[in-house]
Length: 237
Ligand SMILES: Nc1ncnc2c1ncn2[C@@H]1O[C@H](COP(=O)(O)OP(=O)(O)OP(=O)(O)O)[C@@H](O)[C@H]1O
Image (cartoon, rainbow, N blue to C red; front, side, top):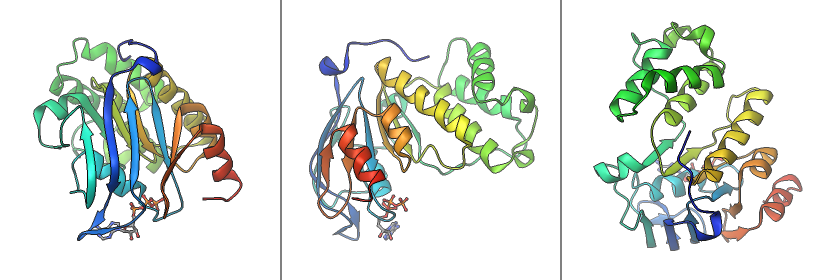
């Protein structure tokens, strides 16, 4: 489990965006975003398909150049290659790739060893239980269903240390029970001091996990969780 840290209101600033325009070839795909993410907070990016949520996430972690404005991650310009950023930022951007000849358990162990997790065996065992993968510990990736692969990807991102957790639609392809459990896990992450930035289409997930909502669209704006969930469920996106 992540470390404990001060309450959300006094949390350390992890990500700032100021009039941040994101897009491709110099053309913005949505209205500029301004927000601050502190440790202990979880900001949910919501909006219709194609609104620009993934583009924003990718820009915030330095996978895409910004179009205009400013963004900082851990006080610096995001740089996905920097070892400082890689140590602190765990991300699940929905692109799963596995080693075809390593088992489920070996994938988790590999992540633990790569990030110097002290008790790799226990962490691996706990995550196998949490994500209902224990029966599949010795399975190879191509023996997994689509949702089981998703669960392995999520377990892998939670196997490593993190101050920031960035996830692009983590709820995708999960059954209802696993989805709900993951929402509570994300809530536990931020309560333990991790800063979470995630795109999400599931209103229940946002209600459980988020402390704030960024409505991404022509006029990108910050909302309370209650207003964000209302916008999602009442079709006001
Ligand atoms: N590599 C790319 N080059 C050019 N345009 C792109 C590229 N990737 C995405 N886009 C466009 O950018 C816009 C925003 O896409 P993005 O993937 O950020 O949306 P999203 O809000 O995450 O959508 P969804 O909810 O469907 O995942 C879309 O119009 C999309 O067509």
